[in-house]
Length: 285
Length: 318
Image (cartoon, rainbow over all chains, first blue to last red; front, top):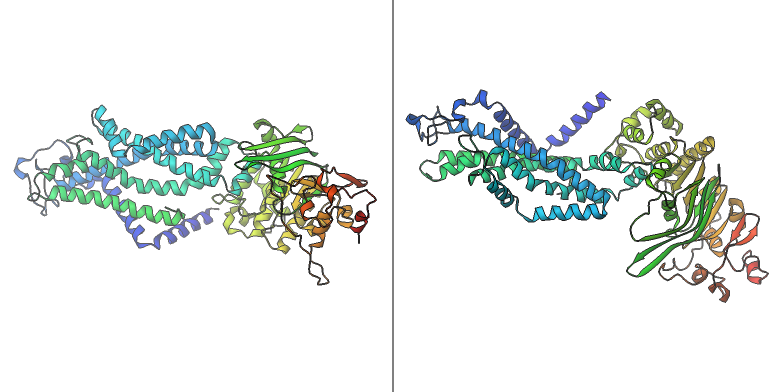
């Protein structure tokens, strides 16, 4: 059993590593993750992540000491970006941890049980889908004091319906398969049908979407940060850092440009990785 | 054991009611192997689905009585089904690879079917259906198995809880003839050993002759002939059964005769005998409903000419 498990892992890696782009995606995601996790250890100026002012060094162009220059109060942009990744990744993970279980359960129940459950659940889902995530998140954040926690909740509220839709459609199509009828005639209960027969079949699709969404949640979080609804200063935030620097473009280019690149790189990384997983799981887009 | 009385199934739709099954009565006694034969679309599989309660809900009307021993299966609630499905009655499907969940190993799927049976039992069961390396098969995913292997796994899954009744819906028709025979040999052998009953749904008269004791011939949702397999295949009295037998290729090289025409529209079935539009012996009398008529002890046929002294009934045997 164990040996076979190892073989399966190797087969999966073999198939995954055939695609150059997904391997690049994996490398990017790994680097960003390590950078975010180990930010306090590897950032050249970890104290610059918080309330720190160094009037001597404001708006320093990139050099050997400050790889990406310094900002309006003399903080090292590179160090702050590493810390900004921390909150962005945390945002993504928490949003998906909240949205995916809710969406999956709603979609699964609606698809399998049908009838009133389906009508009520899917119409509510449609209402949420009708409002763009960014607008919905802005509306929710407008009601409360912006903070990272509030951002997480606001984004998650707009994110679960996508999973409900996805899993609902998957469930409907899986239900027509003969192995589901076969499981039915062996006496499987509704709970077992949903959670042990159907749910695992959808896992590849859900996992692929989660990977792609890691990037999209970061992008949405940055958009909220850009309009001042993200993590509040002095906590570093990718969107806020882009916004802070735009006023002084093009002379002081380094902060907005490097912050934008940081967003680009992480979203691209998750996208490439997600595409690779999609091929690996044989999911149709 | 299994008793179906006056079962009617109809679907409501835009074009009105489609009466797909009408007044079907069928019985499978304990330890008996019974065949239900007929061409595609005549309601054989639908009958099997009713037995397992797979038709409930939606735009469908089901009437009649379905009993498994003393338990009524029509209607039945979840509590009843949880005791019937997989325990007292099991079903074997046409396409073995489609009937296995692609994301689980065989071991996982078999464990889900068996209630509290040790892994040793599962291995023994696989060995009983002539799987030589059960450990490899248990660790495999469905796509890693050949069709014949998957069919055996399904037979093992159906048999493992020692059900009283096994319904095999065109088992292994997706496989080649040799593998199909092998699978059926194993199935029938195991059923005989367990003392279970078999309802074999098929359109292959060869299989029916080889494996069953009694048979029912179904045409367009009616039982048109029933009796012991020898009686029906040896002395078919309904023109449809005769036509089906004539459609079997012969070893002498003579080309088999097909049956002209096709199944009637279920929305407006022909009055009286449903086979009458295709029947070479059709006459005016065929336009009124015909009951099943006794031919011989245990042998019945739904044809007006059966049991009458009309010349045409003689002509059937020429």
